[in-house]
Length: 101
Image (cartoon, rainbow, N blue to C red; front, side):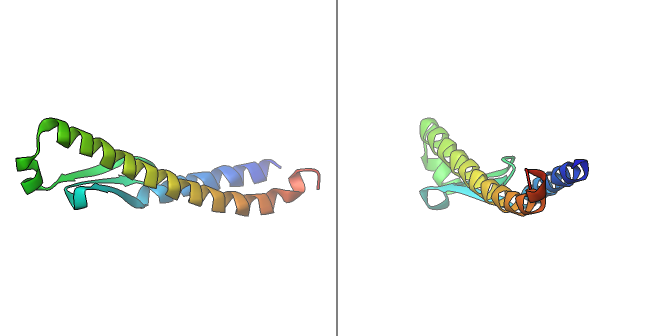
């Protein structure tokens, strides 16, 4: 049983490392602001189109930036959930005998 728990922990660590290599994006106003993050929810880049920035006021930039960040984090949640779901399905197949089998 301990071996299976260790294998599950190792699998979780592998998933976390893989999520660090997956990029997700949040974009608003046709790319005026674009936020890049990892699937582990670490923001890695923020790009603001220079022409948009010149014509936008502070509140507009802040509001759109917030929206773009939330879109990127939402994408990260979706990717992470999908990866975890797939791994859990694999692990439960391997752990089936542990639960009263």
